[in-house]
Length: 303
Image (cartoon, rainbow, N blue to C red; front, side, top):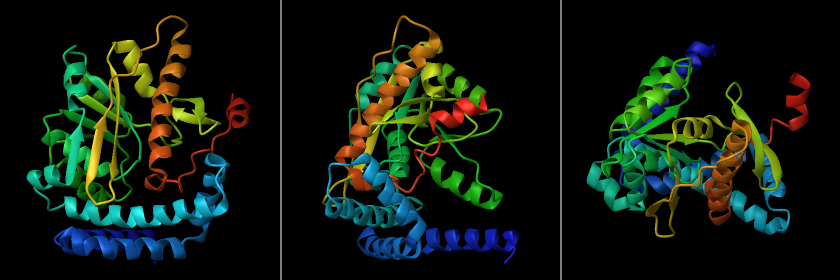
């Protein structure tokens, strides 16, 4: 199959899934999603191997049975998330309000009173697409950065889904930095997911589960240069299937020292909050991501 044909099949499959699966009530689509999650885990041995390796790094004090339980929970979570994202395609605002309790939104509104915008640091925790949809319904003027997908049809489809509740989407690219600055100048909340090793964007090494970890630092740089608050927040699925989104108070902005030191300190503080969230709900994070791909020695050798 050519890459063009493969892209069409992927687009058609996703479109069909959103059209059909998204119309099912969650009581029906979630069991289907869980089955798909278990099947995907069984068919992707490389991902399973990477998950196990990362869990050993992050939780060396747990025994193998405990790490295996997290791995199984991760497969279940991603299946559930697939069903929930499809559901978002047809959900209405009051459906989201009923599904997801939002606490701490006042931390956004208080931070916005300064008129300089807010950097919202979060990670790929829980059903993060649900968080992005839930915040605008509560009146949060949200702008978020997203990767441009290779297939334009897929890109338009996913962007449409992400923006249907009022989230402004900025696609990564040469103009993304200026667009993010413009969003902050308009006193918006600029969301950045800073828990992945992304090549080609500025970063620093900060502690993450006891390891020096290459982490995007653009948000910290913007916050320090523009004097805008940094507010962390996350979402997680509860045992009854509902979700809880929690917005934390602003992080302290470092003062004194070089700009580089302050950027590193603020990035480390934001990452520490993400780590605490992952430790609380370890099965609801992307353990298959190559989080420790970039090592300090590789950066030094490139300089």
